[in-house]
Every structure is written in structure tokens, then in C-alpha cells.
Length: 448
Image (cartoon, rainbow, N blue to C red; front, side):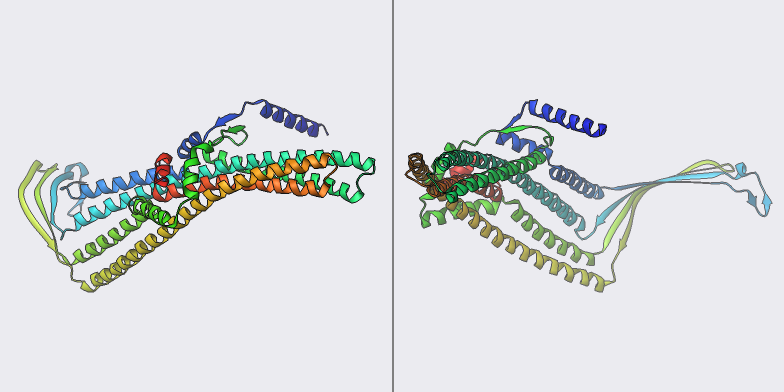
């Protein structure tokens, strides 16, 4: 019992401390920066880039002369079946040589190109992950703001339901309404309580995800700065009134940017190039290999003979010619298949990304129209609700009339909230597809 009291006291203390702790204010730009710095996947890609650059350097080093040094030492304790002093038979030697590969059929330069393509491919992966992180943190930020706005709308609706119930209680006590209408007012109030609780849960979940992405401690309190939607008014007006011809022209503009900037498409093109280089490399296996030893020297010491050295300078050619042609032919055929497969992957990537771009642009246009229409609907609904509420106070409208008006109002509010943040999410999708880091540039493109 005493342990339970201590645990309860500790829990109350933690809640008080958390409640007293000042909330950390966070805006969208700060959230982006923190998410990029906190991303472990981006950190791994950075390490992968460094590793790939080292592979490139090692390939360059392989083109340089090969330096080699050898050392050996020996002692004998038995000579001609007689035991001898090992120190009297001690001998040692060292040698040093320089060897340069002269000809490999161009394989070294092709391998260098393949390594360069591999490094660039990893960079494209990192760029794609960069925009994935931005997309994720923005969606989490918008989801948290949307949940907060939804809670505010639900609490406003709850206040209306409580007012309606209090008026219904007064009228019931005076016999002005029947039991059915009173129960309906009670049910409406409890429904709004449940909706408010669900909205609070949504806030907790969305903020937990945002904290995880940005690296903010789970127990910290955060306060998010609101998005200035007036910044997007011109774009909303432009997209909501766009013609089919203008939409087609806008899609073509974005398609050109996607073709040169999308990291996934660029990686597919690099994979195709690498497959072509691998095919060329396998064909070089038919070529002979020539190497030359251009300098060699040795040093020897023995107890019997003392110290002496031998050195030579010159060129010693060494060549090898492959004779297992069937194995090389098999490798070539396999690399041809890989090349053709990479070409198909590139074509599929182009078609898939273009379809994804078209869907994202159509969603942006549709969401822009939804924002403006839901805004107008909300204005009309608010006026309608005020009218019904006033009639309800004057006993000229029933509980059902007020409930219907209240439900219409909360649906309109939630529809406007959802459309507004849904539009922002479509902008994030467009920016990620076209690898546009500056949101201002994206808005300028949409205004063309």
C-alpha cells in the first residue's frame, strides 16, 4: 500500500513538472532542419557515399605501379646429419620490386567508370532520402496542426451541445419539450464529448510522430506555429480556375523538371549505364594482360658469407591469355540480360514517375478547389447555424433542428481543415517528385 502511494505521488509530481515546463515553440522550417539532422537513414547514406568514394580512390591506386617488399630469415641446427650452432648458419634476405600493369584491354578505365557511376548512384539515393525525410516531417507537422484545428472545432461543437442541453433541461422542467427531444440533446452532447476525446488522441499521436522525426524528447511539450494560408491564396485561385489546356501545359513544365531532377529516375538511368559498362568489362576478358617489372633489387646476409646485395634494373614482360572462352561468353550473355533488364527498369521508372506526377498535380488542383469551396460552404453553414441557434433560443426550432445544424457546421469545419492541410501535402508531394528544395520556386511554377 505504501509503495502504491509513493508511485502515485511520483506520478503526480511528474505531471506537475511537465505541466509547469514551458512548451518548445516549433515552426515548419525548424522542424525540417531538425528532421534532416536527426535522420539516421541520411547519416547512413552519407557513410555509404564516403565508402564509395574510397572505392573510387582504390581503383585509381590500382592503376599505379605496384610496390612490393619481401623479407626472409633462416637458421639450421642440423647440417649433414651433424648438430651445429644455429647462430653459425643464420641467413636473411630482403627484396624490393616495382611492377606496372601495361595492358588489360581497357578494363581498368572501365572499372573506374563503373565505380564513379556507383558513387553517383549512392548520391542519388541520398538525395531521394533527403526529400523523403522532408516529406515525412512536413506531413507529420501538417497532421499535428490538422488534429489541433479539429480539436478546436470539436470543442466548439461540444460547447454548443452543452448549451443546447442546458436549454433543453430548462424546457423539460417546464414541460415545453418531450422526453425524446431531451434524450436527443443528451446523446448529442455525449457524441461531441467522444469526438473531442478522439481529437485529443489524434493530437497525441501526431505530435509523438513529429517528435520522433525531429529528435525532440518524447516527454517534451511543443507548441506548433500556425501555417499562414494567405501565402497560398494566389496559387489556390490559380489552380481552382485552371483550364484543361493550362493544366496540360503545367504538367509538361513539371515533367521536364522531373526528367532532369528526380533522383529515382536519375538512379535508374545510372543503373542502365552501369549495366552497359559491366557488359563492356566482361567483353574485355578476352583480352590478354601484360605487366612489366621495371626495377628489382635484393639484399642478403649470412653468418658465413656476410653482407651482399644484388640489384637489377630493366623491363620484364609477363603476359597471360585466357583460354576458357566459354566461361567468358557465358558472362557476356548474362551481362547482356542485365543490361536489357536495366533498360526496362529505366522505362518503367519514367512511366511510373510521370503517372505519379500527373496524379500529384491533379490532386493539387482538386485540393485547391476543395479549399475554396469548403471555405465558402463553412461561411454559409456558420450563418445557417447562427440562424437556427437564435430560433432555438426563442423556442422556434427543435432540438433536432439545432442538432442537424450543429452536425452540418462541424462537418463543414472539418472538411475545410482537411482540404487546407491536404493541399499542403500535395505541394510536398510535387516538390519531392521534382526535387525542388525551395517552396517559393514551386509556387512560382504553379502560378505560370
